[in-house]
Length: 372
Image (tube, rainbow, N blue to C red):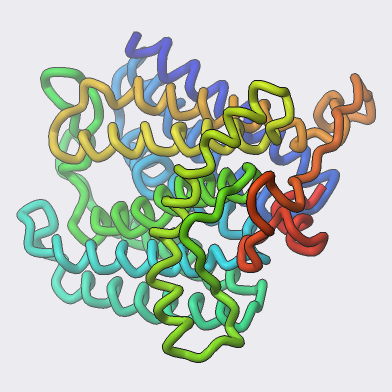
């Protein structure tokens, strides 16, 4: 299993990356390219584990595994979600994720594993705070270029990690594994590098999960129990109040709308994006939990979590028929069939559309969530 499971994970992630890259080649949507990069990192990290399971670890594998898997994957997948939801108010959620990531990085700076980090955690926190504020401001003014600022955070952290890795000297033998499970652990890397994992993982993983939940909420029939509005034209105090209420309102309205969603599911009318994004949310959540356990020394579920994660993410990709305008062999013009087109409903059975909910209620925002 130390070879088969990560090898299967790597192959699935690589196939997923190829399909996403093929979509980007045909349609040129930024989120497809960014997700393809994220899934390629996922495939490389799992591939390193498979090779190490067969032939043992070496320093090159260990360094590659840490950068692609522990540091980069979640951040790039979350960035893809930011580009997908560029024309929505999801920028507030991404800004919150980025700020919390920077805050967490600063708060854990005194732990023994981050010894020697010096003032670097403060720099990470300040950078996260400045970029989060800028993203929130751009979102407020309905500027759909806010994902570029998110990209500055992710790409910047990626380049910093490469620079730190390049000057890091690892003690012999050049890698470290859990003696009980044989799974790789990050104990040899300096605190300045290890602190980039929560910086990117908290931002990326939560953005991916929240983005999937957000899309589920958009595409399902809704019962508006707790109203709110993020219209920037309202008075400032009302806007701030609604901004604080919005996360609670979305959760309450989502739960209250579940009976309508189950009814549509039974009648075969539920938009395919709903089950697809639920699978994506679960697929992003599972490896986040197992990776967190790995950081605390529990490595038994590490590879299983990554496998289940890529299976569910891929399943979510396939379930959404909107992913495929036409089914064809990647990187060719060979068409195998045409998928049906769907549109989110403009109103549900019980309430008028929410004016602040992106996607289903007007053509411009529907294209933002379904750009095909």
